[in-house]
Amino acid sequence: MGMLINLDVMMAKRKMGLGELAEKVGITPANLSILKNGKAKAVRFSTLEKLCEVLDCQPGDILEYKKEDSK
Image (tube, rainbow, N blue to C red; front, side, top):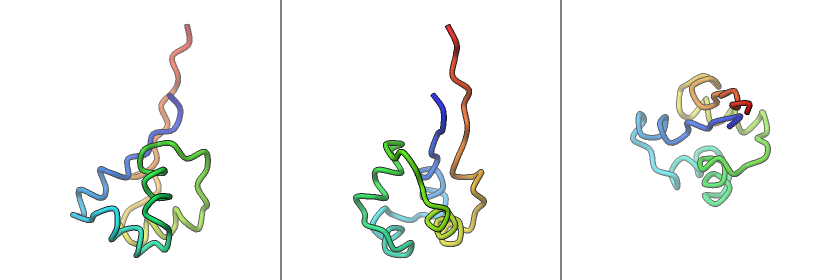
């Protein structure tokens, strides 16, 4: 599993849509969608910082680590 992105949860709590958040953060809606859907391979600290600023949250509110099940 690895890293989970709870961006949709924070967006819902703040009643903010993808387009509005993307504009306030300064990234494209397409790139924000990739991040929100967990398809991004990396996130810049500057982007994470701006997301936290706009959503008034901590990085741990957006990012969550889930240990992968070993078989």
